[in-house]
Amino acid sequence: MAIESQRKSFFKRIRGQQETDDTEMSFVDHLEALRWHIVRSVFAVLIFAILIFLNIDWIYDHVIIGPTQSDFISYRMFCALSHKLGMGDSLCMPPINMRLQVTEVSGTFMTSISIAVVGGVLAAFPYLCWEVWRFIKPALKEEELKHTTGIIFWVSFFFFIGAAFGYFMLAPFTFNFLYNYTLGTRQMLEYKPMLGDYMDSLIDITLGSGIAFELPMASWVLARIGLLTAGFLRTYRKYAYIALLVIAAIITPSPDWGSQMIVCLPLIFLYEISIIIAARVNKNAEKKWEEWS
Image 1 (cartoon, one colour):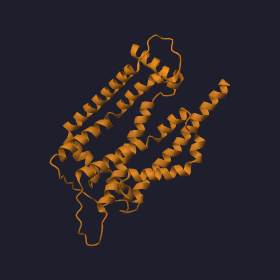
Image 2 (cartoon, rainbow, N blue to C red; image 1 turned 90 degrees about the horizontal axis):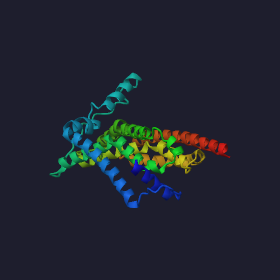
Image 3 (cartoon, helix red, strand yellow; image 1 turned 30 degrees about the vertical axis):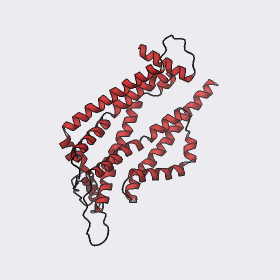
Image 4 (cartoon, rainbow, N blue to C red; image 1 turned 45 degrees about the horizontal axis):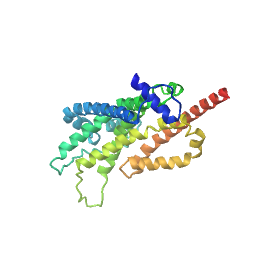
């Protein structure tokens, strides 16, 4: 409690507020508190990373390579939906059963470490958000704290929804397109991608989608601090759509329009949700201003 009081005093001094309490926290003490937040976060990631590394074979066979296998749940669901809608095999993607290669002695071990670390970050994401929240909480006023109830849940919710979208929707379409893409007519090319390249693509798709789906939360935060309004979002909607297309092109490593639209359409939907969120925040702020006036 004493440390919490000191940190509140520190943030008040940053804001230029007067502090009558004698317990003030120096900049070095503040860095010390930040260091412990980082240490606890790293420790949480390491715990999950070790658990994943102990089960690395199962994780690799069922999670990492999953989007490249013909029996992956997304392939089966789309094919079943195609038959149910009377579309035949139009939504059934051809099987790929991709075989990866490693050209470095330490390639498989370093890939295992990479899988464990990235998996640890994903698994510990809610806790990491909580540590960030604990660090910035003393800088908030009592009125601001009332409007942050459940923020960790919603940040984690949108991140995991985005990561799941990238893994179950975008990754299968991307790898299927790239694997079945041909160059020339004589079929003289043999497609054997590197394990490292595949892992980079899978991580970019998953984490990129998770971060992109944080758009509503970013809009809420910016609207709360007065840097964003619903009118601004509506005015620059057409430019935002172009920017979302560019973001979709960055997230998707495949150059086909199909994969990019799979990413872009949900982002456009989230953008429209962001407008609604910003409008509600602006309306509440205007109401409070009128009551105060």
